[in-house]
Image 1: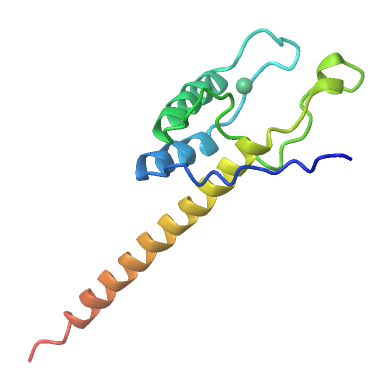
Image 2: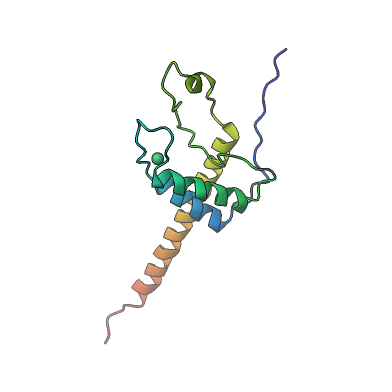
Length: 131
Ligand SMILES: [Zn+2]
């Protein structure tokens, strides 16, 4: 009988403000790799690898992983017919960490935005016309 693979819920993942900063920085990076040169990583990919490692330590994962996060929308990056294409598999744990960080990042932005709005409300009540 086939076993159903249960995904870890990453309850031990320790999402800090710094982890959210690293995640947001990683999402902003764009790749400019030469598609004809599969041996050289562009500056964006090198930076992303560096941040990925920092994120792994920041999340205090109990073991070494690579990648630490993976976009759940990722598609097989290898050309069809290659060994890479046949053997590539999504990294569900890394995708789960991505989702947790994405939610934490969204919450942090919402908190910041609501704090700014209430600061504006205070400022608005303080601008009464002088008499
Ligand atoms: Zn690249």
